[in-house]
Length: 472
Image (cartoon, rainbow, N blue to C red; front, side, top):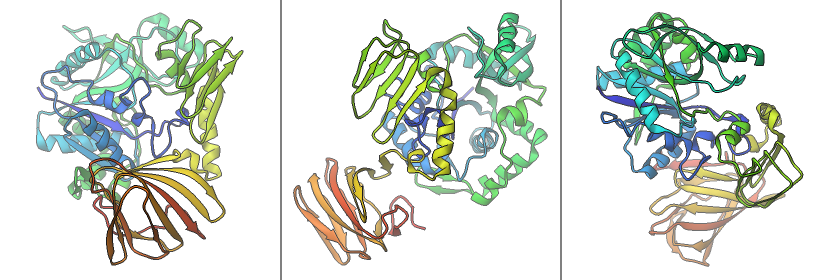
């Protein structure tokens, strides 16, 4: 049996703002060490002998970030399937199943959200192999986390009859997030597990069941895959066909309706890190119950999460408080109200503020840029271009640019000219002039860019050529 990790990376993680943003969401963040949540997920099944390269389903906007993070692990990918827009997990899994069943008719999928924490990979691998045996019999298998406390932030799985010869069960029903009293009755009964949202099933079994219970999803995804196109390392599904798919979760579309659902008890620490309080719970705490990262000083402070990115956080006399500092935003919240952070994100969206979309450092396939200063009709950025990378050949209608090289070597195209710039040298790009910036060297190229003009938005870019296929 070949196991194919199918990693679903479509969520925005708005409850983890300001660390998580729409264009750099929580799966791409290193919450618990040097690796990101997505990277931890990508290697989670490495202890299983027959595991294959992972397949990712992600948003079009995150494609280069996902590819770069997997490359940094030194891993190959089976494929990176690009969704033009999110349609929830059922269509995403259907795309993966259609791809895999063509490659391997016996493919067994292990579908995992990219943003979960499971510190014990051996325990998880053992549970996956239990689930794989059931999947080989045609079951659609989910994992039920053995709950250690009543939890109102998770859905639950009510187990049914035990499956002969196993320690696993048929699923009696799925239940939504309960209130505190109901959650306690679930835990006391011993018949309920937290719903992990992780699944093991044969690709053909999933296609049979999605075709039976939600044929519109299968039909839309089949057309989208039939008309998909290769783009470097990515497989871009046909947009209009995919957007015709209903939006639904794996649970709602199939698992709550099928008679083939089974649950494997998962006895290990698990979290979907859905809020800052869950980050605090699964992190190592000091003697005062604090989790502190970055430049943090505390006095008479306890049971708090304090995360500093750019500046020093000094906390005095706090108890049960969340403080998260980034370059352009600071969150201060009661630990018991962390689920309400999404209300702040909604307000940011309502006022069309950039803080819900981007960090001050914005990542691009060629590197990144960071805002340093801005004012009336000007802004200053620091650009870092990776060795061998290049920006698109482009032009701006409303701004001129002045580039100063502070590190590395730049190859500049300006109109009909092509020339080199070294450290402490500069050039000027007049408004309306076609230009390109490249790094021909072996070290990162750092540029200070001063923009001036009547409009400085990122959408004032006309691309003529681009190695990353971003030409309109």
